[in-house]
Length: 295
Image (cartoon, rainbow, N blue to C red; front, side):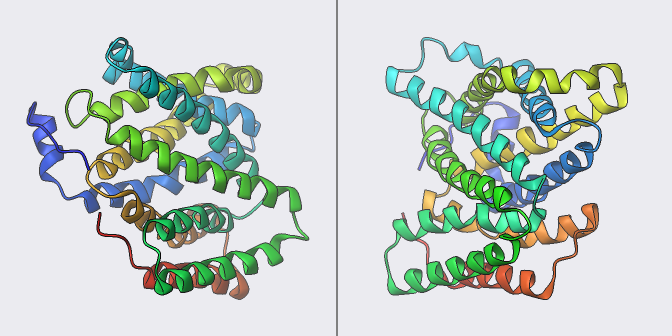
C-alpha cells in the first residue's frame, strides 16, 4: 500500500483520518447520487443524465486538481491505465443507469457488488471465503429469479455493470497506489480519467442532455448528480484505496447493498419484497463471514 507523504494542511488532515471514515462517506453518496439521477430520468433520458453526471464531475476535477499537470510525469503503462479507467468509468456508469432505469436500486446494488466479493475471495482463498461466495451467489440468484420476468434486459445491464465495477476496483486500486505526488496523486489521476470518460460519453449523451440547458433547475440537478455520484464517492474511494488492500476494500464495498436498500426506500419509495430482502440478506451474510487477506 502507498504511504502518505506530508504536505499541505488538507493533505495532513486526510492522512490523519481513518480509512473507514472515507468509506462511510462513499457509502452514503454512492447511492444517494444515483437515486437523484433516477428521479431526473422523468425529465431527461438516461444517456443525458449520464453525460451531465460525468461532464459535471470532469469540470469539478479540472478546476480543483488541474489533472493535465500529470502530463510528462506518468510512464506509458500508467497512461494506459488512465485510458482504461476512463473507458471503464464511462461504460460502467452507462450500464448502471440503464439498469436502474429498469430495476430497483437495491437489486442493481446487490448484483453490482457480487463482483467485489469475487475479487476479495481471489485475494484470500479459504473454505470460509468459498462459503461466503456461495452465499453471495445464492442471494444474487434469488434476486435474478425475481426480476427475470419483469426486465431481463435490465439484468443484462446490471451484470454488465457488475463486470465494470470489478474493473473499476482493480484499476482504481492501481491508480491509488501509484505515487505521482502526495496523498491526492490518485485523485489527480482520477480527474484525468474522468476527463477521458467525459469525451467517451459525449457522442451518445450530449444530445439527450440538451433539454437541461433550457431548464436551469434541471441543469443544477444534473450537476448535483455528478458531484454526489462521481466526485464525492470516487474521491473518498481513492483516499481509502490508498490505505487498504484491494481485497479488504472490495469486502467493505460489498456492504453497500444494505445502503442501497435504505436509500432506495427513503428516496425512491422502492420498498423491497420479503423475497428481495432474503436475497439481499444472503449477499450481506456472505460478506459478514468473509475473511479478507492481510496484505
